[in-house]
Length: 401
Ligand SMILES: Cc1ncc(COP(=O)(O)O)c(C=O)c1O
Image 1 (tube, rainbow, N blue to C red):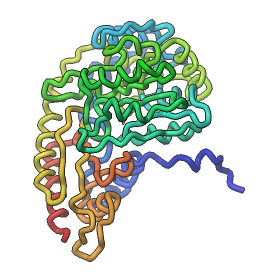
Image 2: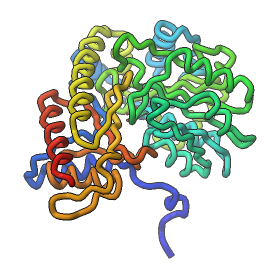
Image 3: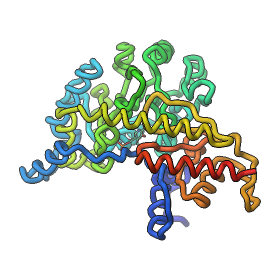
Image 4: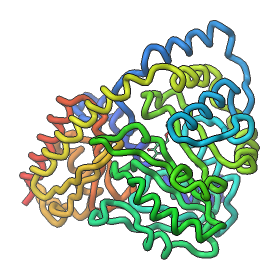
């Protein structure tokens, strides 16, 4: 008899985390690898944030904090949500902090899903949503959002996916893995459907809120439609905008009943995010935000470079996304082609594997995000490396026949 629980058969390891491990191994073997797999900015955490953490250590902020986080951090989050999103949350009851945005989603799904409860997930999706739903015995319901619709869900597509068992819709804008972002008007359209279904809650994953380009205006659903405020969980975090992926800090704002339940779950698992990271989080939110714009300018330059170079690769087609630091080009034009040593590229996983083997470029196969035949590139990396990677991809594509 296996030691493993049957629930483990419903999930697989995160494809992006797995690729990080493979890349580290290949680099250790001395291979020349350009890693475009990990979803993290190459910028360092700003110094004022680091200094706040060091000061916290010296001040003895090294003990347990309340489960939902220190009041100072929850107040800073409430202030941010008011200042930037026009939303009012009570820091005492409606805000909770977790060990990354990932844990926020896990806590929420754990606290709310019974067997067979459905969660509508627009595809392509961030790798972890379906597995977290499945782990707690919920049923992911995918809505295919093809390239032709800009990888976005229309109101009709949403309405067709809702059933009496639907408990959640997970909305992620700007999106991982495509960078597509919903305009205020597009969110309005989805909200008009959702107001008709009072039992459906919305998890809005706003983690790429600040990574937007070309004057795109970010909007979040509870702000666009106040009627949905009482059934919206707003997720955000420090990882992406403050280059704090390793600090593990994310937060949720939601109705008090849900926050209390999520705190209950967390109190029986990790207890709370690291006290030192929380002190750093206060400085991140309250401190200067002036590095965001130059970061975005650089990301935009890289986006434009990558989109243009990928579109010059034979068999690759790449849209220009509104935000985040990913592109998910189609590789439909290389499927069925042969490598110089006669191997047929059957799907996007074969293509990603071949890119890694032949030219040392690590990308994530679209299959991991419910998007085939595509692959995802994270362009949050050095510009010259990106140029080199795109040249290698062009070379690989030209070598297929
Ligand atoms: C869409 C999305 N949501 C949530 C997260 C979670 O990030 P973290 O756990 O680092 O806060 C990520 C990280 O890649 C993401 O891409």
